[in-house]
Length: 123
Image (cartoon, rainbow, N blue to C red; front, side, top):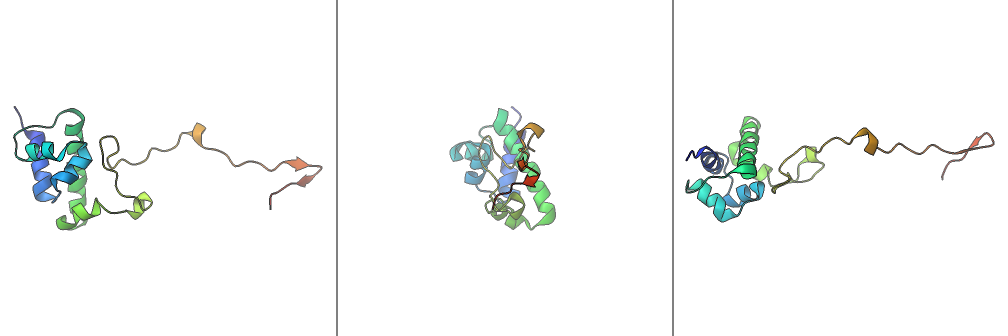
């Protein structure tokens, strides 16, 4: 069995300094399962393998702009670019950029009603 994704999990632990608990939150797996990946006793599959790949790509990009020791801290704190929210952990919401609203879902401002030539405004 190829252990490429398990190797990625171990690399995240070693190079980015992420704990098994942090990797577990990012993938939606139990911490004990992640420890099995790090110890190469098991291999993530499916969506969890995809999350490992996404997390590896994110940490590699972060290594370009900040010290490696700070990556785990950055991933755990509120970020100004995310409207002072933390990067999201968990199976279905891992550091994804919010989707843009569709044109149909954007509400247009209400136009003031006109009455006898005057514009009625609130306030």
